[in-house]
Image 1: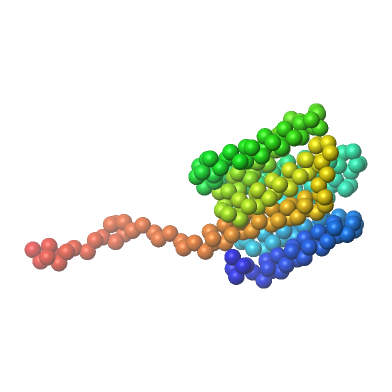
Image 2: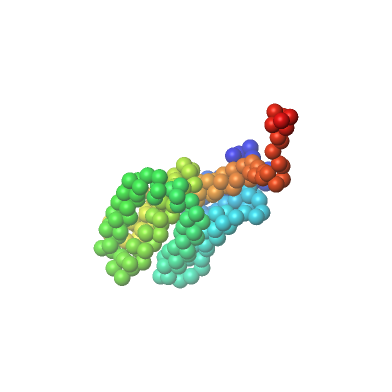
Length: 248
C-alpha cells in the first residue's frame, strides 16, 4: 500500500510516527507539557493521513473513521480544559462516541468478520468483556452500567474490525487493550502497572494507526479494482449466424 500513497500521505505518516515517538519519550521522561501537546496533535495528524491517502467521494467507512478520529481528538483534548473531577467522565463520553462511530464505520463488513466467518472466535472477545467488567465492578459503584456499556461498544468495535482484514483485527484488539488499561487503573483498587501512561498511549497510537491503515488499504483497493464489464445483450450485439446455417 505504501507505494500507492501520495507524497502528502507519506509525509503525514512520517509526521505521525515522529509525534508518537516524541510523545512516548516525553511520557518516559516525565515531560508533562510536551506529552500533552503531542497527544493533542496525534489524532488530527492521523486524520490528515486518512484524508490525504483517500479520494473523494470517500464513502461510508472513511467518513465514519474520520468522525471517530475527531471524537478521539476531543477525548484527548477536552479533559484538560475542564475541572479535574469531571475530566474522566468527559474523556469517556467522547471516546464512547468515537467507538460508536467506529462500529458504524465497520458494520457493513459484518459478513466478513468473525461474527459470520469464525463465530467461535467471539468467545475470547466475550471473555475479555466479562473479565474487564468483573474486575472493574467493585470500584465502579454507580458507574458500573456505563462501564459495562462502554465495554460492550468497545468489544463490538474490535469484533467488527475483523471484517476489514488482519491490520484492522490487530488494531481493534490493541485499541481494546489501551482502553482496558485505562479502566483497570480507574476502577481496580491496587492496580499499579509500571509506566501505565506509556503503555496506554503506545497501544492507543498503534491501535488507531492500524485501524486507519486498514481503512486506507480498503479505500485504495476499491479505487484500483477494475470496473465491471458491461453485460452485452442480443439487442445490442445480435449473435453472428453460423456459416453452415446461413448457407442452408
